[in-house]
Image (cartoon, rainbow, N blue to C red):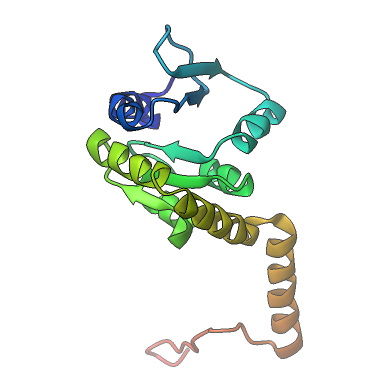
Length: 173
């Protein structure tokens, strides 16, 4: 249970979400705590179980406080076609782009408001889920390898790097 993952922010937002949507159940992966109404703590899980939990979820929430270098958790959720609500962090924006909704870190009120808005509009969940599934394809290794192969072939065939800017030292060396 890492504090920077923002579980306490999510737990603070949950009562407001459940007041409007009493059937909502929160599944927390990677942390174990005592009983909380409407929450299932799964602790550490294997990749297969994580994929199953994501596949059964409509919305993935990442209320992280910071310290993320890459939003792999978002990519995993997007690959499962989850709508994503995440903290407004550079790493998350780089992965989620326009296919996710963002809220200020450490703001349970904003988090509850965004999740509530999505739950109240199932068509928005569907739209965001489709956008997420489309966007995450750019992180597929087969796509990445093809892009690198194309870049290498361009450089090998032309001797030029696409987008490269010629450089000359001030002394003309």
